[in-house]
Image 1 (cartoon, rainbow over the protein chains, first blue to last red):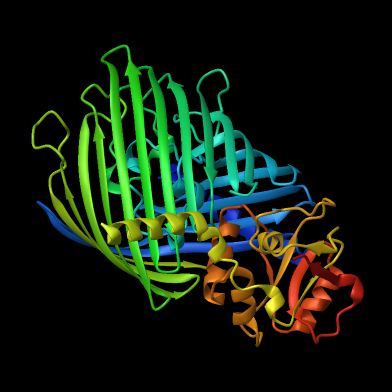
Image 2 (tube, rainbow over the protein chains, first blue to last red; image 1 turned 120 degrees about the horizontal axis):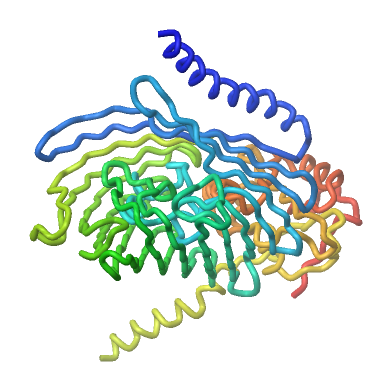
Length: 362
Length: 148
């Protein structure tokens, strides 16, 4: 009994200590003119699911603190900490980004720490704040194979030349760990390029490679809500991934396409090819209203031991109203179904979902 | 056939000339002055200038960090300034910066209610850049000329 009490106290103390340091430290940050800023982001969700079982939830979403500061003209700091409900009155505290950036020449930087792996537009631009998401959820590929975070070292360049060319080269942890880079255990390499011929358009391509010793460790891409499933295969696996993104955010129209292809290889079953594509199309009217639609599809091959044979399609129809630049309301209807009706793939059945999300930033 | 060709031509022109559509309004058309403090540039073309305001460059050629000063919602000319620099409404400008800062790409800009506040801020902060009306009292050493 005493042990349980101690555990609860420990659970409570940790977030309290974090919050205490953040608030005390943030005061001194503000005092240093032009050196640091503290922001908070979060969202509240309502969802109704209509499938074999029907249920509705009204829940507190991810809440986060974001610190952005400069030590001098060359060195800067960025931190992003989230608090997630983990059941029965408990919350899980995560460091999502923590990085030191050294701007060594013009628009070229060296970054150390934990950051979002810039494999596609979504992961490089939206991060965790739902305020910036065009739809309520992330694309399906995030629930299966996108390595959301990497801990390591990154070379970054942005807005180079007339076409605003950008590059990112990363070496760091693989999918097994987001916070520790076991140099001789599991390494990932990422090479990403993008360019923006005009302000509203961005094209991007990336290549990501890692070799896992234990494929059941999937810490780096467990961002898929109820579409995420645990991997039971604990053997070695080679993973190669190519992504292509196209984003257009104009005054009236918004369009985003995220394409992802990966190839896994195991000694047990051999090679598997897996593919996913997410499309978003939005029409903005009266400046603050966006009507949108989307289509998301994911297929993983029968020999895949990373995500397992899986196929899913999702249709989205929604509406967003922006009260201000830092407060918006989204409502969307989703229909999920499988691509194939055979039993060779894991079947999650058909379902309708209705969701409302209020997201904010301060 | 002719209509199809015309339609295709319009699309092709849109993609190739899209860049230039943004530059239709020029700062020279209005009674605006560009001001900067220790930026290492006394003259600049409009495209480069807009690039600095859009956060495309982190540093000046003299290695000073770029600090962007903008009109706030209380500034009487806020919509004009936003249109001139970004070809967007002030609401869209705030969203643009909000997203850039969260991505960790840029330092946030500073917002001021009057031209006088903007001038004072630029005077005190090396690397700062802004636009103000020509009839404001502006020290000569802060003025940046626009090239053709």
